[in-house]
Length: 476
Image (tube, rainbow, N blue to C red):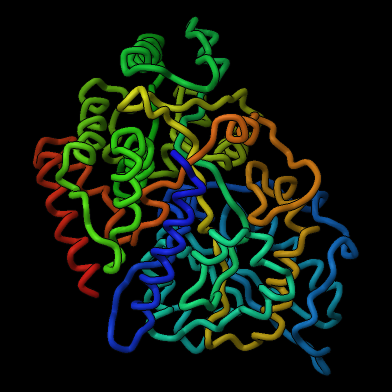
């Protein structure tokens, strides 16, 4: 899968799709195309997930230039910043520097959950008490509604101050804009689409560590999950209880089932200007849900998977009673905190549907902040974003939040404790289906559950997705 080609296609699709979204004559709900799965590695995607403290890792106040968008205040100022479970250390580190550079400034923080990101946060961000910095993942349901109702301020001056067009690269930068105007900054990228496994449990049960971070076949995966069950441990964990995590595995398998041309159309055809050349009822998409049903029938997932949320899933893994958990680059950060120790983990890719199309890590670059129209201090909010996106802060992001990556190009080395970045450099990555499509389309938990329990077939739920796609393209 040529990610550069895909990103160029997605940028073009986004420029066309969101032009319709913000037009007075059309109401397309398609968000920009470089977003990520609504619940997967989203910045607040761990109910109960914790990030490490940042007290000793925050960069010195002089390590990054303070932005100059706002004049010095003549009276005490306040700034309200929405934070997320994983990224709060980063957000507070930036706030500490900004307060030091602006005497009298007082920053307060409001933590937002993954569920709030896609639901009640819309009311918060459009209210008279809106925060100054808003957590607005661009692949969720809230962001496109904010854009359509003109509830966000442009941040083109932030982009200019930090040189973000060049720092992101044109493909990503253009996909973050609406009609050529940026309303968000993407502050961190995360890789997902793989499982973490407990090396100590594997060793205890005599399960060989997967070579080159890969499991070649479903038979090999079944040997591993059967061995875990036989040893008294739960096999592969995933939050299957309705918090929108099944699209992780949809992303894992779809790119290994569809041809590159088909896959590109699945990623972009929510845009009414892109011809539809595939159906969600086609064998290539149906194969992804059928693969999940195969895994469910073979008891590769944990007991009670369809009733387990993310908090319970992570707690089970942290307790040392499960061998594997679907996750992303920030998962060790979270489960280590829950376990109150550093777990001995490594990561592994699941078997592809077609052996000729190997599984690869998936990149998510939808961790985005914006400034609500009702912000009480938009000038200081822009200073906050300028500091957040400065090269010095971005360079230290992996130190502040273990597993997170800079969103922009930075010089020098970046922490890579599990060899994930090296693997991507050697083998490549790809953009996930749920990383770029509207939330109404990619929130598939109920549909996956229906297939797993035999209430629907993969073709039937594919037809339902086709109907949703038709509505999106019609501007619903």
